[in-house]
Each structure stands twice: as structure tokens, then as C-alpha cells.
Amino acid sequence: MSITTKSANLAELRASGWISKTVKREIYDNFLALLSRGEELFPGIIGYDDTVIPEINLAILARHDLLFLGEKGQAKSRLMRALVRFLDEEIPYILAPEAPLHDDPYRPITGVCKRLVARLPEEEVPIGWWPRAERYAERLAPGTKFADIIGEIDPARLAGGTSMSAEEALHFGLIPRMHRGIFAINELPELDELVQVGLFNILEERDVQIRGFPVKFDIDVLILFSANPATYNRSGKVIPQLKDRIGSVIHTHYPRERELGIQIMEQEAGVELDGEFPVVVPYFMREIIEQMSIAARASKYIDHQSGISARFSIANYRTMIASARQRGALLGERPAVPRISDLGHLYSSSLGKLELDMMGSHQMNERQVLDAIMAEAIRTVFEEYVDRHGLEEIAHIFSEGVKVEVGDMLPSSHYAQRLKRVPPAWEKAFEVNASSDPAVRAACVEFMLAGLYASDRISRSQQRGRIVYEV
Image (tube, rainbow, N blue to C red; front, side, top):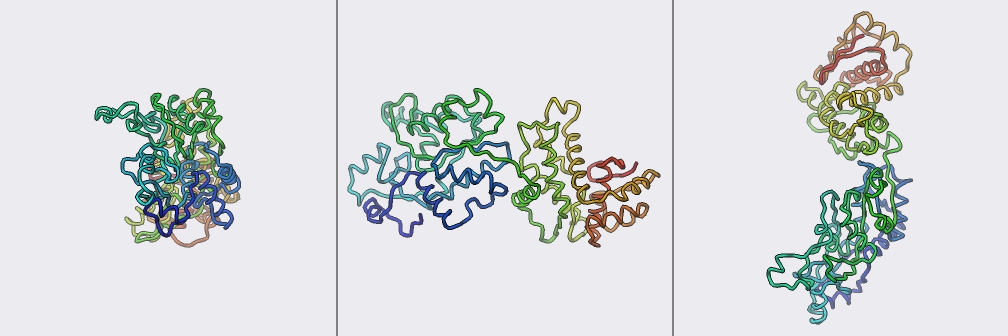
């Protein structure tokens, strides 16, 4: 709903024809309006068109509270925040400074606002306007207390003389303060059981009970949850009564296709590739970065219950581009083109995002696991790009004692000289990209050599950005 002229008091609001709605009805109406106009419902959400989004659509139309169930990095929080766009641009509320909530002018629930409406003529009841961006609150479950999201008795007010039996003695938490809005709690299973009971009470009765205080508020709020299946499905982590009151469970997933993962990676990385020191990223390098996430999710060395976030790809993509841009600035290469040797700097952006399986990786540290994942990703992409014909000839030349050193700080123009002793490798790089640009050719050569190593045809030694290939 778009408000062109804002009413300043309750009488003007009634005359304007404004209709009071519950928050779920408001979202329902605005969602249907967007749907009927054929507008994009969830801008920026990639890969969920045929799976997750249809489930969300039905949950909105069913006016349910929602739980987003999936591993980390599957856009659960982003989807929850996206529901804000289905709220009205602004809604009116009773503008009373002492009121703890944004009361509906037609249906006030706090004592302060009820008394104000009863005491004053409608022309004197002030109206404020609450923008949609402020009608969403989010909280991470670990460490969250009952007082944070439900409320507590305020000792300062008691000390000031307020009766403990008065509503004014209460300090309300985030959920009551989001009356007529949206509240989201991340990692639900990590929420204290006492707080879960409070949430159950709100979902069941839509009222708030604080330390037995007999206040019964008709709280109007859409409640959203997120959780990881490994913990949500574990017995005792979420009380059954609360599970039973959640209207719809939305199952998220990682990108089903590598191309979708690359689109997400590029969108979320938001890296500018032009500027004074431009960078051109070959598509096979983007594929390797995303394939590393795919390989990690399938790796026996990684804890599958934790998952591999899309942030793994995003951070590595940014680091790879940063390494190439640094080379461009130092060597004057325009544009700079990322190479395999730039991936030698991914430890800083990868370690900490991998949670190892202690049973499967007890003899490997994080760096070794990352090296194995990277080699597998390179091999997968290499086999898609390069015909096996001629690879054994290149490996044979290396077996005769040839060594080739490459690196992130080696000028692109030097690669032709370095590969003189292995001319088939230089020619084979044309299969990857036929460009004659020295920087692109250097990237293709390194991809070729790394593919030979990943497929166990040659060996290598590596120290950060410097790599020596041999047999």
C-alpha cells in the first residue's frame, strides 16, 4: 500500500479510508498483487525458481509462520529478509511517546494507547507512520535470553515506584516490539528451552507472559525461523510443541548446477573488474573456484553436517581477483588475468570455512585437505576442457628432466620462453582458449600444467604463488 498523504490524527485516518489488517493479511494482499502483475518476487535469489520459491509462495498464501531448513550458506537469512518487500511502505500507529509498541490505531493493545484513545477525541489522537524497513528484526539464537526477545520486569521502573502488577513495570523484548511486523530467529535449535516455551506460547496464543504477569497482548507478528537439519532433527534440540506450531518448513539447498553457483558467486562477490587496473577472469577459473565448493561438499574429509557455505566460493573468488590485480599493478599488465598460481593464496580465505570430519581427516590438516579439494576441482574442470590426446607426450617430455617454474609474479610475456622446452604444452593451451593475449595464454598454460599434475601425469612443488612442475 502506498501512502500519498499521511494522516496526522485518528480522525483524518478514518476519513482517508485506511483499512486495518493483520501483518499476515497485509503480506498476503501485497504478495498477490505482485504475483498477478507478473513481477519478480524474490530479486537476487538464484537457483530456487523451481524448488524453494514455490514453497515460500504457498506458505505466504497460507499465512503461515515459516522455518527455513538448510545448511549454512543457502540464503536462508536472505530469504527471510526478502519477505519485508511484501509489507506496506508505511503503516500508521498511535504516536504516544510512552507507548512501548506501535499500536494499531483501530485496535490498540497496550494500556497507554487504550487510555489515550478513550480519553481524547479522535482529532487529538496523534498518528505516526512506521516504514517497512523498521518492521523487521532478526536475532541469532546462541546466547539469546528470554528478556531479549520476550521481555522482563524492569527493576529501574520498580525502583521508581511503579507497581509490580502494572503493565508499565514490564520491559518488552524484540517480539512484542515487532507487533505488526516480522521477527526472525536464526539457528532455532540453539535457543534455550525456556525461550522456546515462550515462543510456543506466542505462536499458540499470540500473547506474552513475563514472570507470571497476567498481561495478555494480542501480538500480531509473522515469526520466521532458520535451522540446520543436523541440529533441528536431533531429538531434544527443539521442543515438539514448538515444531508442531510452525506452519511451513521450507527446505533450501545448494546450487544444483555449477553455472548457478557461479552466478551466485559473482553476484554476491560484487567485485569491480574494470577501473585503473582491470581484471579479466577466464570462465574456467570461475568454474574451478565454484567446483572447489562442490568438491568440498562431497569430500570425505569435510563434516557434511556443517556444509560448505557459498561464502567459501565468494571469498576465494575475491582473493583470486585480488592476487591478479596486485600482479597487474606491480607489473603493469592491463588487463590482469587470474592464473592457477593465484590460487596459492586461497588459504587465507578458505581456512576457517572448512570444518573437518575428525574421523575422515585425522591424518590431514586443513591445508592438506584444501590442497586435495583444489586438485580435484582442477582435474574435473580440466577433463571437461582438454582432450586427452597428446597429454602423455607432454608428460614424457617432463620425464626427461624438464622443469618449468611459473608463479603469480611471473610476467605473462615470459611464459612463451618458459615453455620452449615443452612446445606441446604451449600448443595444447590453445584448446582452452585461442586468444593470443599473453596474459590469457599464461592462464591457459598454468591450467594445462595444473591439470597434468591433478591427473597424476607430472609432479610439482609449491610455495605460495610459486610453482615448479616436473616429474
